[in-house]
Length: 618
Image 1: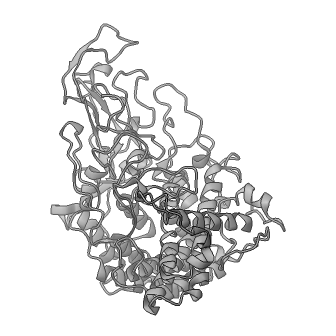
Image 2: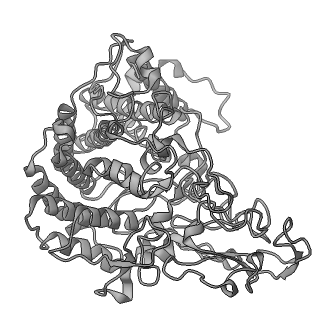
Image 3: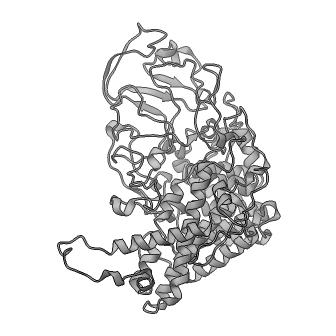
């Protein structure tokens, strides 16, 4: 994006803030001299500067709803199902973002939109930072805190961008004149700036925010831990990193751990709900848990919960409930477009491998993350489970009956009697084994509408039907990740932290997930990529067995669907290896080392002068 774009975003900030000052009361006929109110005069007031800083937060919603480049095409999520040819001998069209073929290029829409969102955020924060010296009516400590909030948000946007694209433009001041010159800056310089900003934020931000949702000292410390960890890996020897960065990552992770205690239960972090929509209730939001360090804010008021209106995809709330596969809408006995199963677009579909990374019986995260049973919301008489191959077979389904059961990977249905009537079995519901996910169910036309388990980690009950309308905050930072940041850094440095070795930090997160079975040994599939193998492997850490791959597996279980997976694989240099091993789209798989960086969006190259360089291989 060029500086003309940045100037345009600054205009919309000003316009939005000025409009927000207008009144809708019954004195609207009274003539008021509003023509004297300009950004130059308003931003010099304490109230104006407060509004300017507030305007830096709404774009967090847009940025974090743009998840495709962070979640899909990894070992945990795929863009669509249809990868399994067992049912009909063919596979669907491989998604470009999963197989990284020639279609994965500089013209992908998600690349352009994420770039624009990140640089719009950088532009807004630069405006606040650049105008701060003109504020003379605000208490110095308060002004320092507000400037630090802007610097924190700028650091977060720059951190996302430098990981995605490597060397990037790094404007640090408000743009007041149009220009097409937008040179890329070396990644090492970007990291230096991010760290400098965050160290200042740590010193000047309050421990507790004046309004929940603002950046705090803890948020700065958490982001420092993540940035130091990433720089320590020193991608392509281009980040200016060293082993000292791993030590700093542990230091900052320990600060977060000491201030933000783990929730008692994993499920306490997410909306309370029933797996059976018939028994659904409006549960607790759980979005202000003490474990949460920083989150994207939503509410029940659409005026304060929308994504930023300067961008055309503005939505009236959180969309976490509607983005993850699979859907329950088409199950027998559903009621159509209601909030019971709500809308599910299946944009992010769990890979077959991720189910096999859990101990389904002992790891409480499996039960919370997945809804393995589908229920009939209303009775269906004379239902035909096989309308094409056996039209004479009918069954009656009562309200509340099970219509779909996805067996855990370690307890598949092995006999015909254990299968549904659609396969000649005895169960009046479909029984699906893990190796049949992704289109591999033995028959194509089962009336039970076969799918894999619905991912209900973020499920929010009783909200209006639609793509958004959620009101639960989206977690960005929580202390469970600080434990695993420390574990990863300690594996790399070979040292101990304040709690002990890497295994100690790792097992704290695991034991929370095991609940009443804390301290026991959970077992995952020894080969998650082999959907037929029942061999098992422990995932409790010891000083002798803990590895980066073990930590990546634990991150997959703990942070599934949170905004981090591609960054994890890129940081650790495991992207190519784990995509080839675990992503189910094998046909046409073309991922290689060039894909550790994204292509610069072609639209930005075309608008720049001198022309911005493209990343190698694109």
